[in-house]
Length: 452
Image 1 (cartoon, rainbow, N blue to C red):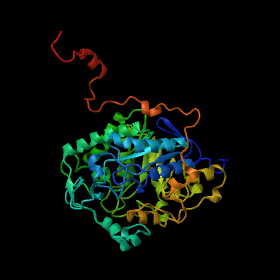
Image 2: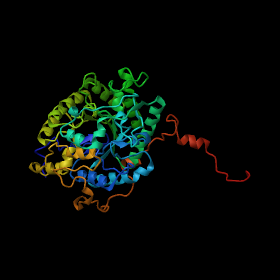
Image 3: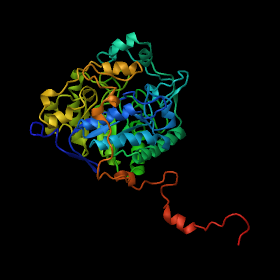
Image 4: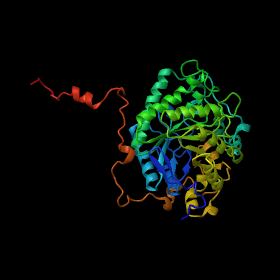
């Protein structure tokens, strides 16, 4: 095993309290492998476990709906995590990831906002602003996706969003509280990291963008108000989840006239760092209305490292950049200080053994993603992704090479690490001490009947 050809990409890095064994991560992707009710399926467990076994140091899930409201407006099928019933599947998922030597990161979402679709299309999607659905043009979609939009009726439905309603302030605050509690559930399930989901047109991004936030209250209007939702959410999750790494995924900019600029997004990242963020994960673009940055072509993705470099100059915490498939260039860019971790989704669709092949000196054997987006075309059609380059994608549960084995000798069955971290009770006012209060006012139980 030799790391000499890729000394930067294969070197460890500290993120929060954890050390990644290399700089390769599975990027979040809505891979539509969950069940209709948000349950984590065995195929999903096998898919993530396969990428962990393939040598990636960090496995990040696709967007997990972290509130009941968010779960009603999803992109096809997403995992859910907002009640204890969801812990069974998620616990199996994290155990599988850890079994193969990777860290597990839950991308927790407050919702799709105006990009959400319910099973009942007559419902109004909760968003920053009422009456503002998205509408996507075919010529603004990334390479290949126009084929499925023109041929598949279900996929074509994603070109136009549902009508929206404005979320009230009390509803926003209720969602934030439920979200923080759901992040605690994710920690109990065994996740090492929480990634707050705020990029490319989803709810937190919609509050940031002047193109989608037309509010006139404390969550709209001037820049400091549009930043309020994501900053408050960062504070609440950081308080709710001690002992884990907490980071945020955001877009580097929107690339449209009047949209969010890179300077504004760097300002947001500095706010998040000041509130305790352990990392920033960079996506790009404004969302579904223009997907060439959300799902980068090779030409578009070429500028991502330079965006990462601008964020790196302003921050002290690690910066994760997506869609850098070429290991030679990624290694050079990390060495040049442009970013810290290379996250990939489609490339690890095509070859889950990418990291192992680099570590074993077999870089020439890597199966390269062609960015044909056949995987996403299938997801848009409502079915499990498959890949022309990888015959096992979507069928990993049936591959004996990636089977989940018995507990290894010496492997503890006790709850470990962050699962044992003392988490504050969010149902009580946080400024009140808990145990002394109980001790001061405790009374012995007398039982039924007359007092003795």
